[in-house]
Amino acid sequence: SPNYENFILTKYTGFITDSSPLFGLDCEVCLTSMGKELTRISLVTEGGYCLIDELVKPDLKILDYFTSFTGITKEILNPVTTKLKDVQKLLRELLPPDAVLVGHCLDLDLRVLKMIHPYVIDTSLLYAGKQGRRFKLTFLARVILGKDIQCPNKLGRDGIEDARTALELVQYFLKYGPKKIAEFNLEALAANQEQGDKEGAAHMSVLKCLESMGQKLLFLTQDIDELSSYRNCQTIKCSSNKKVLEQARVEVPLFPFNIVEFSFQPFPPLFAEEMKNSMKTKWTQMSTVYAGPFSKDCNVGALKKVFSSLGPVQSITLVLETYRPYFSIQYEVLEAAQLALETMNGSLLEGSCIRVHRLVTELTLECDTLVRELEQDSENQGTIYVAGIGETFKEHLLEQSNLFPDLEAVILPKEVKSRKQKNYCFLMLLGRTLA
Ligand SMILES: *[C@@H]1O[C@H](CO)[C@@H](O)[C@H](O)[C@H]1NC(C)=O
Image (cartoon, rainbow, N blue to C red):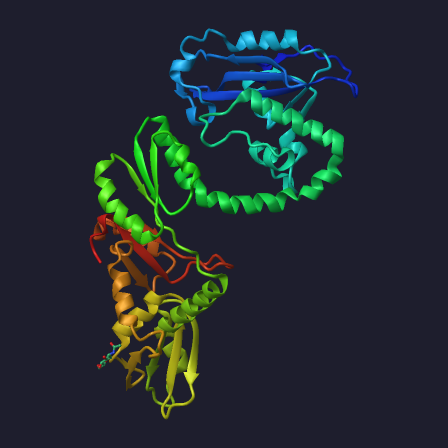
């Protein structure tokens, strides 16, 4: 630990036994210019009895109170006079020499306490998953103990509750042993829950934030009943997306802040898979051009070279069904196919005036429209595709920087395996000015 020389030792002896007492510990922190510093310490005994529950004021100016996690605000901490050294002294006096400290991610707690104690049980390690994956205390509390701690509608954490929960988790482990814990299959449960959390989490934290600022708001949604517990949040449950929209038209002007939520059923997995495959086929077809007719004795190598200069070629194949030779050229990027189409159609190549076109299938029927839309998309405007570049292109470009005064970035794709630079790049122009 940085600056550990200044850390304070507890009064530990060299001995612990099976009957050494456990103590649950939890600390809350804030941010100062020195990093994380202690703002609250909670210590409980094995029976859950609270020994210490103290607010602590750092010497340095606080940059962030982490209020949404800790519940601690400037107002709360203002009158506090307890300092870190008082807490260190108190802990030294209170903890018996064979005390075993218990907590969740205890290293962080000891770090902000700036104390050293050799006997610890960290529940994040005791219940660690595969490859040392650590689970959240709330998750372990719910799954192992069947307890809901840190409810979403309560602002900030309760240190005593966290300390008690860590203690109970250790007691549970000691009582039932690791085999019982393995039966819970924490990995699988956590994976399941993450899925569910992702859906609810986004607006929950927004709501929490607004609530803490005393912002009044209206929430229009099809589901989620529990939200009505937010004090300043009026929730209107609507029976359909259409109702949500209708209600929004009426209500939105009346509130300073609104959340309008539309629900969409995710696609069934089979359909999603099918759609992905058809997208892939479509993309491949759009990136493939047909060129010809050539004479029977044309130089295939030279042709390949010409078409490769427009972008990386996935494959070139001779079309066998035609009277005179044609080639089907599949490019890695759509831009290359488009460039071939726009520059090579009608050109004289190997003594033949060739045509370049795409295959027309049900997937490429509206290809032109799609390409135009992609070109006009604000994400793509100001992006220039450049093909046929050499290794030193970037250096040249830097020397000639006045050619593109608005140049913001150059994207130079590389081969995945060989890391060799490909023969094309994208120039991104500032302000998306030039298409
Ligand atoms: C290629 O050129 C021919 C005639 O020069 C034209 O009719 C055709 O539309 C062009 N095709 C494409 C895809 O631009």
